[in-house]
Image (cartoon, rainbow, N blue to C red; front, side):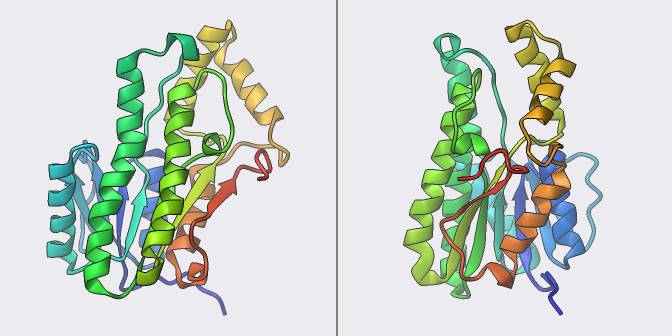
Length: 254
C-alpha cells in the first residue's frame, strides 16, 4: 500500500505561515515530517515538538545562514527544503518601477538561490541525499499581462531548478519545481483588485475570467499544491529531478 510517509524527515518551508505555504506546512506535518516554518513574521505560529518557527528574511544571506543553523541545531539535520516565499507586483511592462522589479526579483528569485545554496551545502555534508522543491508558477512558462516582474522571477526559478538539479544529482539531491496555476489565496485576491483597476474591470469579473480559462472548471486551492509538494518530498519522486510540474487544472500543459 502506497503511503507518503515522511516520518523522520525534517523540512524547511519558507513563507510557510499563510496561503500555499501554510497548506504545505500542514501537509508535511500530517505526513509525519518535522517542519521549520520560515517567514518575516511568525507571530501566532503554534510551535510544538514537530514545528519550529524562525523569523528570517530570505533575501538576506546572513539571516538565511543563521536560519539553517537553527534548523540543524534544533532538529539535528535537514532533509527537505520548500522554497515557497514569494510576492507579486502588477503593472504594464512599460510602467514597472525599478524598485518594484528589484523587490519581486529579490524575494522570488534571490531568495530561492540563497536558501537552496545554504541547505544544499548541509545536504552534501550529511551525504544522505535530499529534496529541494521550488514553488515556481505557470508564469514561469508563459507570459501574462501586468506581471512582467513576476513572470521574469518565476522563469528564473525554473532555470535555477534545472541547473541545481544537474549539479546536485551526484549527491542524490533531487531538485524540482511546482508550477501552480491560479490559486485562491489572499495574494491572488489582491492581484484581482489591482489588475481590475488597471484594466477597468472589477475583481469579480477578473475571477470569472480566471475560472473560464481552466479546463477542469475551477481554480486551485492551496491544498492542491501541497499535495504535489508532499509527493516530491517523498521517496516516490526519487527518480525525478529538474522538473517543473504543472498544477494548473489543465490551463498550462507544457
